[in-house]
Image (cartoon, rainbow, N blue to C red; front, side, top):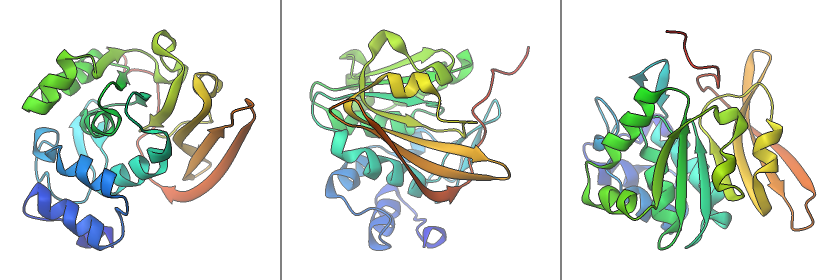
Amino acid sequence: MAWRSSGATNEALIENLARHGLITSSRVKQAMLGVDRAHYAPSSPYQDSPQSIGHAATISAPHMHAAAAESLLPFLKPGSKVLDVGSGSGYLTHVLAELVKPGGRVVGVEHIQPLVELGTRNTRKSEEGRELMDAGGIRYVKGDGRLGWAEDAPYDAIHVGAAARDVHPALVEQLKAPGRLFIPVQEGNYQHIYVIDKKEDGSVTRKKEYGVQYVPLTDAPKD
């Protein structure tokens, strides 16, 4: 029902996603209501579809952001620490920050500086975003997301917003125990979401879920 979830306003979009069962958690619904997608999407912000943001990157469709937030939700609590690999426009980074405040922190990592700057600029368009950034609740950094971001590890939850060639070991290593990784993985001509759980005893399980279509998690473009 994703194709029928678009709306004329941010509120209409989120209400339609909830009505069609694409958002089931009240916490995720409130977080997404609190982050206006118009600050992050270059055009048609309330359409439930991905959009290019330049630099061979996209802002994913809202229903995919909802699916990621709901999957990670058991690990998104006040004070939790989150890594958002391929933070792009900054939209989901902000939504995740809403879900871990007060006291939580989300690090968005991008492989080219213009996308780091884009996420920062977009987040600062709203008063809520400015407050989170000024308080350290959101931080954007430049780095190879396949290697995670060791400086702030370990993380309660890690989201990857581009299709990886495999479940990169560094990301699993940087998870807390317990913790969860949500990652799209390229398998031949297809991509699937994998949910990787690290248990309290350090053991790791991986669950293959539904098919998706993301841009690849790659090296930064050559100048």
